[in-house]
Image 1: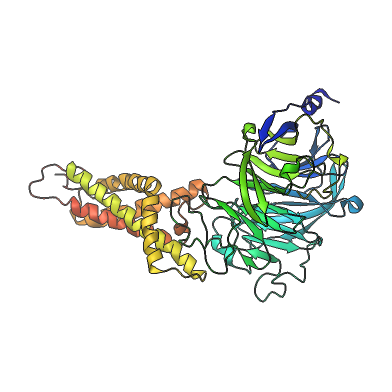
Image 2: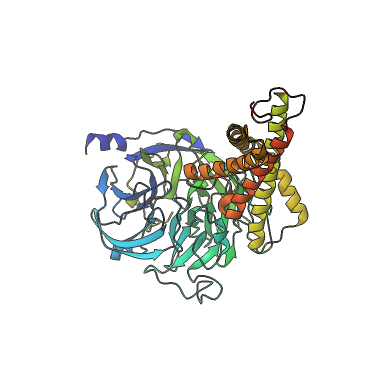
Length: 381
Length: 156
């Protein structure tokens, strides 16, 4: 083991206690250029997609590979770059991965999904399977979170492009939506607008601003997403098909200028958020904790914050938030992603040019490669 | 000098108030266009909300814009009394339009959402024009005036 990797593997441990639970923070890897998402490979290593337009493999010892070859160029600007990377539910047999990223040019860009076959440090047979439309001319508000459902279909969040917020209410385009596709990019016939008469066949839900977190509660089957409000109005939603989440007509947030986006804070036929933050915390990354390492955290939602630089633990009961705790603020970094590893531990990505992959483990428990347990093989935190 | 200051503050406040009303109602028009109902009381409440919540950001921007635009107008029209009203009105309009266009050029995005449309942008120009017009009226030279900087009395 090389010295830097060895040093990283040693428990650098920032001991802490959140929600009456003792834990240690282990830095698994550092020097990641604006990491955006993490997924867990069966061999104990990790894939980290970065907004800088790279996916790198991180070994279980913390060694960071070069960029994976074979992936497409991204439109890297402002909020654009590589976003989410996830494994196919049948990864063990087909080695497929899926990557969402900012695609296009300054004048014509959108969110695209490609899939390919992972071979060592390259990805082969890379094929675009889905691209949002219409393309836009702003380098922000892409969405880009991916989530495989239990039926093998794939959800992706899309953003409103900032300048095109009214498009989020137009069911016939793909801005400000959650879309649902098959893993080959085709449209499921049971999508709410599959026949195209009331909306785009790929649309699953609409009225979103820029969702940056998407997670499945495997116990209840509930799907949660959170999205940034404008100024204030970050919200957590329970996602169901054919549902309007309101943006921009109904929102708890206001424009950055101070003006209302809309005077409507609720309306008939618009889903209310499960919870919201009236001061923007900058939600990013979302997981339903299902591990055994922290029994007291089980079934809680964890999400990162970019503005407040911490993690929020939301204790849930019947789909409602009954408690909120602020955690891991001692890291003092923007938190971009939060996932539950297959080893039952919690993983965080910090957002900076020197971003870190951090593992949260019970106090004093020896580190283990995440392959030691296999509770969540697809790594769909 | 007091006359100029009073005129400037009045003009800036007028531009701010009109600008906010246009922004507020422009945003609401977008919501209504999406098929949602907004009552008269919600419209009025939105104006009050926006006027109080945009003060810290938008009023200084407007004041800064007019602080550049109106002296430039003075420089141009001081020897052309017949152009005073036109010059100040145009200057107020262009000052606000330029401010919004500059913000968009710098940010790459519209700082004020209501100015994403041409109509919304022109409405802000109209607020600036009204400010220029009022400034011109309030600095109209009077017989007792001897020397009034930027605009009130033409250079001899």
